[in-house]
Amino acid sequence: MSSSFDALSWSERIAFWQDIEHKIDAALRQCEGRLAAEVVKEVSDYLEHNELGLAWETLAGELLALGAVLPESARQLMLEAGTRMGFQQAEGHAHALWRDMQALLSHGG
Image 1 (cartoon, helix red, strand yellow):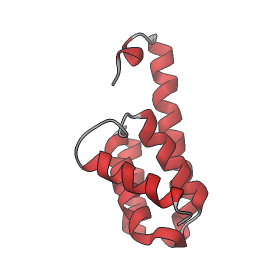
Image 2 (cartoon, helix red, strand yellow):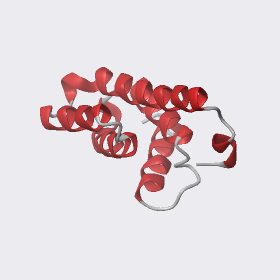
Image 3 (cartoon, helix red, strand yellow):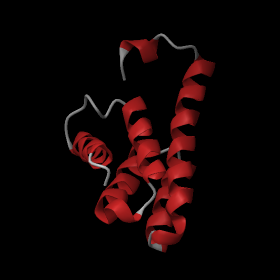
Image 4 (tube, one colour):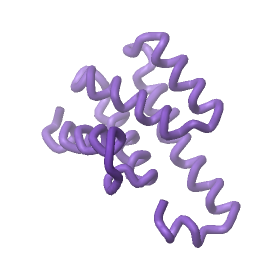
């Protein structure tokens, strides 16, 4: 997290994380009938236990694997959530997923 996150009050931090959770959950709900039940359960379990990074990575991987079959709005929500978590600047697996999600949206996929 950035220093701007550190400057947030406790209630602002809670609102920040709730916004991310709501974006991931909304994306999951938009795709629920098209995703394997195991994936829906896994992401839901991560959200229930406040494991937002794991929820995001799991769902992002599925959305990218399924590509254009899923609603663009779900991919957009995931991109926004990933950006809020700082994945556009991070290194590693989450950044690669974020970058691929951005590329998919940029190319109208």
